[in-house]
Amino acid sequence: MTTYQQKPEFKKNWNPILKPAEIVESRLIEAVLNSTFPPNSYLPGERELSEILGVTRPTLREALQRLACDGWFEIHQGKPTRVRDYLTEGKLGVLSTLSEHPDHLPKNFILDLLNVRLAMAPTYTSLAVLNAPEKVVKVLDKRINDLESPNDFAQFDWYLQHEMTLLSENSVFVMILNSFKDLFLNFAPLYFSILTACEHSLRYYDDLAQAAREKDDEGARNLTEEIMRESIHFWKQTQFL
Image 1 (cartoon, rainbow, N blue to C red):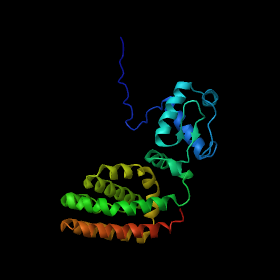
Image 2: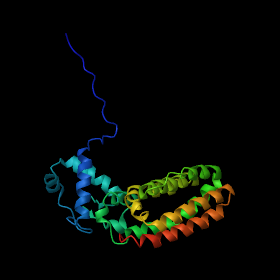
Image 3: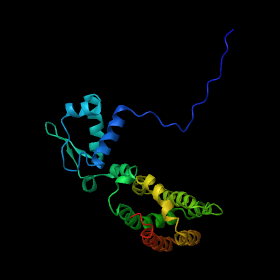
Image 4: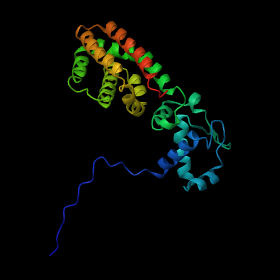
């Protein structure tokens, strides 16, 4: 008699196994960030590099082509592959990748991102209130009785910013914000470990909800600009510049 056993369910949070080209991409990026292949240097020839990485030449080509599209490398047929200066030649894909390598962030990189957010957030928040004030209020209502730890604040603030970009109906804002999601969630708890920063954020959430109820998009813009300027001031107190 054959006994059939029920197969265990695979865990839904398992990460998929990386493909060879994805592993090569990761190793090449790490080599650039740790200066094994510094900016403006040239990679070894295709045959040598494929042997170093232990992959086939087609796999190496696939990885290099994708990384070149993001701005990590410059490829010209018949010439050595140049390592781009990713801080001046990189694209949004580089920003997203850097968020996964916080140990290799350039000096003042977080402050640079905060200044970018200062430039963007007042506009996309104002547009959100203009386009969908009732939905903005509903988003902000989720904060009630749910913000106790620095991580709670970080998660909610990310949720708020992301929803505001969606409600702004400007997909470019959404894509730019998404590109540094990991970085935000890694470092925001440090910011929200400052009690005064939490207090100012709570006041901002209350005031923004009121502006949304009054359909005051210009007021929302001014409130958001003020809190974004304050966030730069508070971040400088974290000692993680």
